[in-house]
Length: 107
Image (tube, rainbow, N blue to C red):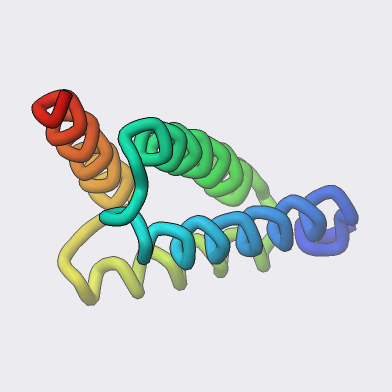
């Protein structure tokens, strides 16, 4: 069975994409959130990044040809912006830490 033939993989990919899209849409109102709302948003984004990192690790570890091609495509796309997948995660972590720091300054 191929990597993408797995119902578990398909469901997780769908859920991950839907949750990410919802968080991005919600984030457009971040400036209007109260302090607790901002904390919740940051925590949800951190959890999302953890889930995404795990999902990508599955691609990396899979011997399935399509999974390997998907990873190569992602690396190529990110390379166009001059970054690696790890740098993408590092940058998101830095951004979330900056958001936390700004939130602490407001208290």
